[in-house]
Image (tube, one colour):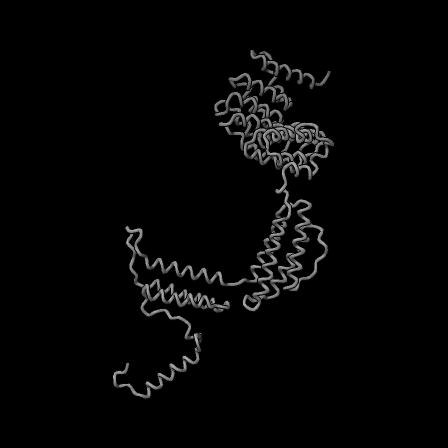
Length: 457
């Protein structure tokens, strides 16, 4: 509307400019400058919603990554405007109260999610999918059939990928490492191709379809975990030692045969695969009977893992194996006075191992003023005797002289005889007239050992 002072020429120029803008935009179209929404000078709930409506329309029409970058920049402006806006706060005591700021924040977040969904796909997505498949190949224990199926899935993928990027041919695959190498070659080719998310969108989409097929092929390939335990054991030759299945249960029959033959790996296989208390007990008993014959790096590792959980049968077996690898763990349990049964097993195992590192901790358990029970202290003394270290002579001699328990004194005498030096034997021999029969018996044996060791005239 004119106020009467307008120059007719100015009005004419304004009308011409409006006509030019309409012609430039055409029917339903506009230039980028005209289409770009502008943050309102006065930010209110209504004005910001209108601004977001325009951004949503721009997001719907985005065709390139650059378009999406523009939309994201507009959302940054909207967020900044919302931070500065003076909007009413909801009533904290009314759960149903309007929250215009919260509603606008939710809408901006929803539009940002829309931007992310519209982006890509990217070459990096293809590479990530290939690397995930390579990890699956390496980390999975395949059956023989499963390995062949996995190889077929890789072959199909490489052939499909070769239609989109330049992939060097790879030789016949003899193992999983070869398959992983083939996938690495495709990933490298995708990286080298410099695929643009706008210009090469169809190529990237085709590669992603191929990776989907690869993932599905690997999912369908047979893993050991897919088989029943009985099938796994049969496939790995566990039952081959039998030749027949009439014994019951066949797992136990096979276990006894593997024990006879010293097949440690098969006993470990049964221990790992057969999740029953019955078979677990018999596997551990087989190792205990085998003793040093059952000691391998793998068996010690398995038993030590159990011993670290204070499993007494495993501690006992490590002693029978004379597994010095267990010394550090077992020494930690020497002072566990709250668990005397564990202490007894640990003491004997350390003695059978010959663990010289345990001499002082075991000697400390001989102290009658300590917390160690009378029923446990004899086991500490015998363990020192089995180790045979001369550093134990003095604490054993003190126990023999002063302990109120005849069982402890007799055990100390026995231990000194096992150490067997003249000093150790003489420390025992002087108790030949002892009132305690079990102590005097050790003294008599020590005296005979001294006589036998004496030089003949």
